[in-house]
Image (cartoon, rainbow, N blue to C red):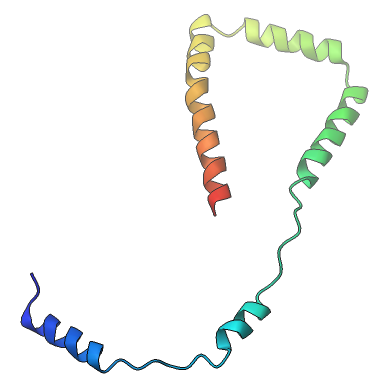
Length: 104
């Protein structure tokens, strides 16, 4: 429900509305906007791949795998099960935040 002052203000501003001429201002603003940014999303994955390939040649793969298996074998089964059960939720959150960034 509107009060009397709101109705009076709406009527006053509705009757006394003045259009300001554009004179090409909108076109000038559009022309001065910066161009599209170049896509540089490929840089990080390429350098990560290069680093991974270099590290595969430098380190002893057999030793790393052996240590990883020993590490996983030392974790209690309940913790491994909990991590496995939480992984879909984690993936869902990561997907949500990635899609949220793309929306803007």
